[in-house]
Image (cartoon, rainbow, N blue to C red; front, top):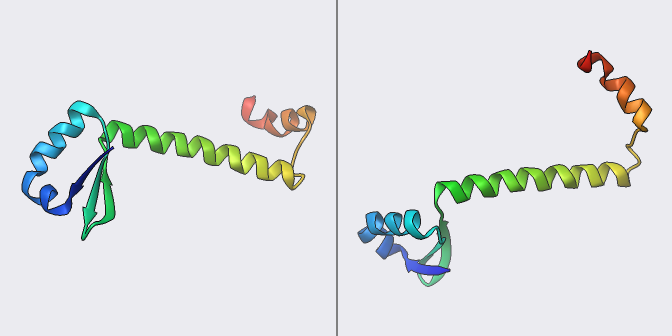
Length: 85
């Protein structure tokens, strides 16, 4: 991963965006020597968000199982019948 200072972002924003589009490698932006932000291309950001949504759904399902909030196949089929008909 590449790291750039915030002053570089201010002065060379167009070049950094072109690099992102070409290489699709996130750029860590630092301010006063400390991590401040990441620059990522839109496609990578959207893919990451979609993956996070899937993982959150899996986590909710695992929590439901742990809490005993489960249904048999027959129960689920009966509950969904009104939408499937």
